Length: 284
Length: 245
Image 1: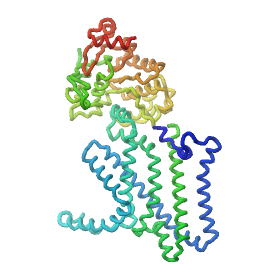
Image 2: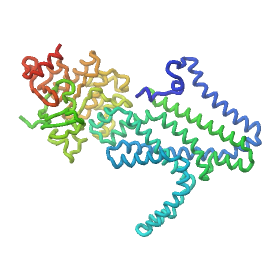
Image 3: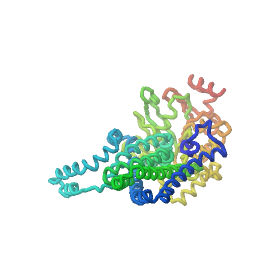
Image 4: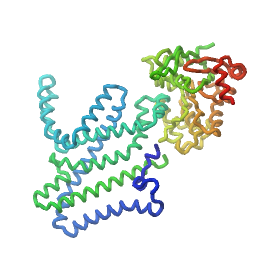
């Protein structure tokens, strides 16, 4: 189990028998730097070298970058929470909890993310309004609250991503928890710990190390999928790109810049995840 | 004689169609060392695991220190805190150091302060002979050292009973003695122990009573002297002839 948790980019990228050693291994690590530096140089070069239109595009997109990052980070925090409880739910001994968790995961994984986002943004207010009206007679305060509830585009996007990615994250947590040998739970319980204590102090800390690589992948996927929120009027990077293009009709320049910015972001986060993985596996 | 600390009465347990235990009854008294021997698949481990309710018996009753362990109203965690268990595969927590392994349950179950838990943990690690390994992770320890940390982890809870489930079966021969020495010392100190093991050296030196199990039943109850000189049952004789080359 320590073996799988210990993963470093250079080791993963090469099959065991051709794994480069010494100097050539250093070169493998360096390809990442070369790539990031190249992309950064390209962006800066375009912005500095041709301020019109590239400098202008970058300035126009910059607040979109912040929206994309904020959306990704906020949604991911909720996704981790849902994933943990969803994963525990799927492993629950209680058939009702297990059934509900499984239903959630299976249904949500079967519906495209874009459709879920559109449903939450366009159809959910209507559903909540109808529920609210129905509750007006019995619980007027809750009914009124539901009728008046208006999600901001940002909140709707966070909700949509949490529901959708939460289902995938539940499966990652479930697999991670199941990968911990059952002797660990038995040892913890035999010392008098409750199920919750054993999970919290023994199982989850080990499972988290195992699932770190797929969780990191999810983060990077989410960063890219966040571009879908441009349909909900969230002014993210992609949305800002569309707005600029609609104004100037500079399709190539605009989308090239958007693509390069996403690329820098994903490369950077991939690297950060790999770094955290290595730090966590030290000495274990 | 005083009230037995463990009373097992007519316990049955099946896994699917396999009948692991079919009507097992025995008592263990305070300070006794009871060793369970028998061929593999005879139900020894299952019986041991029923005592602290890691397995739930299908029928029968088990009373530990006056508390019926399979009663719905019993808080099983309270019972388990008083019954230490040592496993064949050690089951140390690999993300914690030896010291942290021994401290964890003291902190969260016994609610001891960090200082007190650490003091007791260091005492127990010294007792099992590896005080210098406090800051090592399990992966940095040999099998024998890991098992001794596991014993220290159980002892730090100051249990009334210790259960050992084939504690030396997963060890290389040169490490078996260091674990058995710790167990012998515990036995001499008067700890109540139920041990599943085929270490005849330990049986000879420490066992007060021996239960021989076969096919889910206790078929002979004897003492070390009688076991080696005059086994009553034919199957006991056959088994002994196989393990005492």
